[in-house]
Length: 282
Image (cartoon, rainbow, N blue to C red; front, side, top):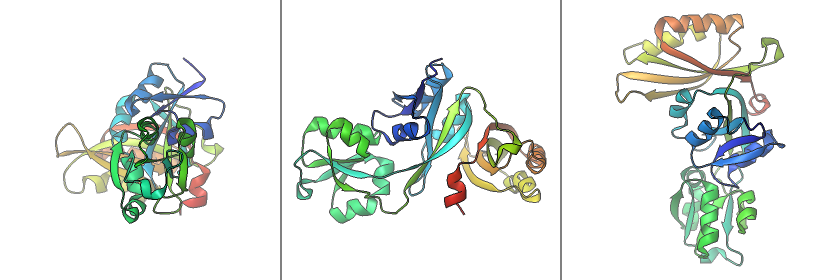
């Protein structure tokens, strides 16, 4: 295994690369074409970790990631909240009135929707923000700009015409850090988050019963997502984040209760709760 590489989706300059630098400043980021290939790089020992975005404070969940996680064979060992500062990146010498079109990842375009509308820009969805920046630099058309990170602008030779253009303040993306093997803290090491998937039949009260143990035992569910699985509508899969450690009595009892009403329970990992939760999530 290459112990000094951390995989991410995208090319150099992506926000995921900024997250890699923030958490593992001594490791070398490994660009991958897709989320799945970033996970495969860890599974196949081409990288030690993967830095994967799962949700954004403005645009919501990142599509496809939750479908990939259960099948990845990897474990969640940590979380990171990355501040996202979007820049309007242009060719040197470009003026605002020159711009007709902006391109970026659909998440970034969504996060800057009001700004784009007010300026009358057309939009082009790109595979990721940094690739959009790279394409604008290569195209050399001053009527086309990109939305991306300042790092991407520096790498590909674009300049920032305007900074922090997201529609809401505090634009933040939550990342999960994945590894081949679990790194589970002790219950006494501080506040923990446990992430898991489970399935229930799509019948009345199934989810209510499955989650009843968490309520009874006083376990806080901080996130819940649902998905149809196996190409049908009568079987639902749920992803949840809960506060606590499986060895703590309350969560242990809640998980035992879950087993009576859910199937295919899969704990993805227990890891330290990021300090961002305490400071910003009420």
